[in-house]
Image (tube, rainbow, N blue to C red):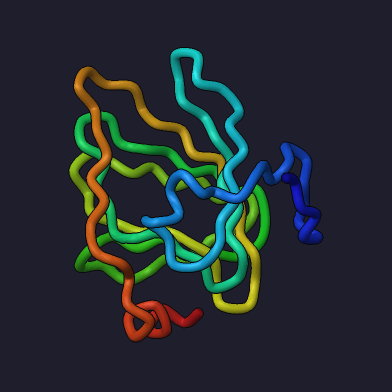
Length: 136
């Protein structure tokens, strides 16, 4: 069921991300754009929503911000504020998280970089305390 949440919907926000919701704090939506060769999806996060810490083994990931305001953080580094048009190149083996600010929705296109035997490892949630430290 598609919901209109007032977000920029050039590509559509898709359906509630029930397949992966166990790896998110808050509600997100998934719009698959293609699974042919390159896996490309748009993920939309409601305000305050973020995914858990995770690692892309082998291939890595590229994020292209399509709207709203969000955050990206690598383990051991300061969080980076994200806005429409920003691009984040995430090398393989880097533990990180990304999501919306506390007062704005956030959307990005994610491209899984193809690699033989690539996988995704989900880790622990980003704690509320750590999330609030990034200036959300």
